[in-house]
Image (cartoon, rainbow, N blue to C red; front, side, top):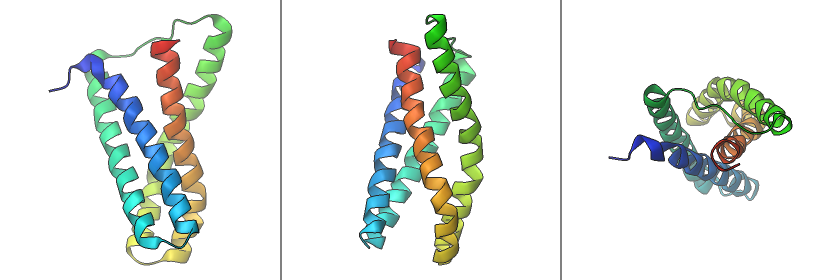
Length: 138
């Protein structure tokens, strides 16, 4: 079992993994490699789901971690955290809709949602890593 104190690092690694998989999935579909795209996006979904489970487990046991940086840096941190949090909530139904449409073979409708879901999901994944670095290493 992983100690609770190690979960923030695991969460950052899962977010970074998701971001890499999303970028690779985008490249694959742009190159016409649909099977590879499907595999990479499935892996990104698994990584993000594992992140969410780990994140909820950590915060259920550790509570809230406060940022202790200097006020100017704190303002930047809070701006990133605010946009990250709002978009993290918003991305869930978009990803579910994109996946559902892809699984039903509704690829034109899938693309319309994925055009929004992908950049938002990437932003959430990358800012998750930035938040971790600012919170635990700054």
